[in-house]
Image (spheres, rainbow, N blue to C red):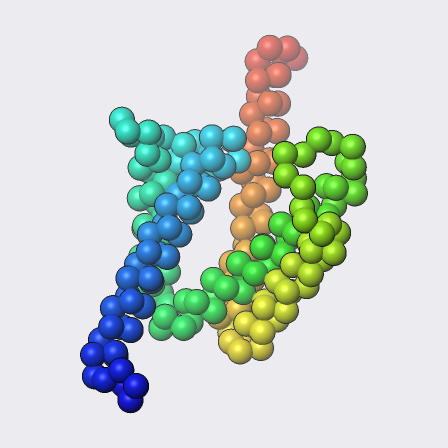
Length: 181
C-alpha cells in the first residue's frame, strides 16, 4: 500500500483469488482424472470410470467434489485442511521419486520414453526435499498430520479386502462352479 496505494491491496487480493481458483480447478480435474484412470485399470471402483457423452469422467468429478466438500466441512480451518493434505501429499510425492529409483535399478535395460535429467542425483534430491517438506508439516501441525496418517493407514485394510480378499473369493466361487466337489 505504501508503494502502490490503496488499490494494491485490492489488486493483490484479486490476483490471489484468481490464482487459488485456477489451482482448485486444476486439482479438481486432475484428481478426477486420476480416479478415472485408476478405475479404468481395475484398481478403483468401476463406477469411477464412467464417462458422459462428452467423454468427461462425470462420476469421478462428482465424487472428487463431494470428497472436497466433506473435507472442508470436517476441517476447522483452511490451514488445518492444508496441513492435513500436505503431510500425506509430500510422502506420496516422495514415494514416486523412490519408485523411479527402484524401477531404474531393478530394470535398467527397459526402454523409457523419458530420461530423468541428472539421474540418480536429481531423484534423490527430490526424495530428500519431499521428506523435508513432510517433516516440516509434521513439526508445524502434528495433530492434522497424524490424522492424515491414520486415514492413510486405514486405507490399507480396505485395499486388502477390495483387491486381495474379494477377488480370491470370487475366483474360488467360480472354480467351485466349474469343478464341483
